[in-house]
Length: 320
Ligand SMILES: [Fe+2]
Image 1 (tube, helix red, strand yellow):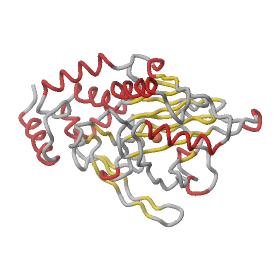
Image 2 (cartoon, helix red, strand yellow):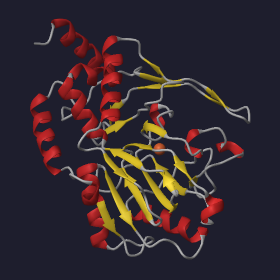
Image 3 (cartoon, protein in one colour):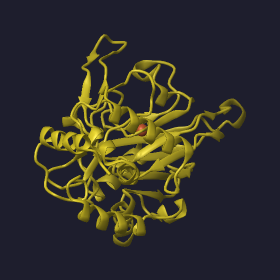
Image 4 (cartoon, helix red, strand yellow):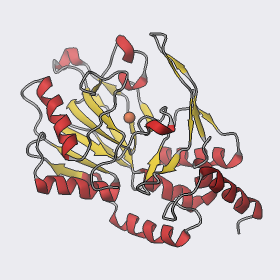
């Protein structure tokens, strides 16, 4: 039985979060949640192989290929595409990737601090420049997160494409989890976890002073937010232990602990995959991590692990 205090806290959080239309993510609408949950789990792919779609021409996916990608993104918020590894050089892949993303309804590429003029960020070991010192640009393990968790609520990342140009010799495997599954696990455990994660001050990333002296302002916002236009869920999360401040209340801290334990101990819907050259992830900003890797490039002569990343504020076409 829920206590009166818990019910009252939930109402207060709802009032603070503002009015949202009833739907599966509304804590007062259990019936819609139950129906949505049952349909979601029934449709969710059971293995990583069910997420894979072959694309014959990355720059111009065919109608059936496009439909398969969208269908997967509707069910699981993600798909893995396999295309022919590029034989024609770096510039061609970059152009192809942008046109691939456009074919899936992604047009407004984010202008990230580490992006080139075309908005593409090279994820590789970087010894200098603006990427130096950040874990994504090292060979160290990267903990669970959604992209842009350090952005303010107005700059949430809706979708991203992560494309493998060169794989690591050892390691560099990705973990993937649909945020809607994380939501289900948390709500089933304790609906107060959801109320805590929807609080406007749930998670703060402190200000960051970069090498060039520029300061990124502190960013405070909820973990889960529902887009009032589409009714779709967006998640802002990082499992990192440093430089993150959780709202100091028991439900928030318990929710953080519970989610971290799922991510660490596994879930049947956590998929693990090592992207091969020509393969990539297209997703509505799902939770992901990466194992550490080794690239004895001097031995293999193939060059270092390289992935290209494009991020967008919008969601993939046909997914809300
Ligand atoms: Fe990421």
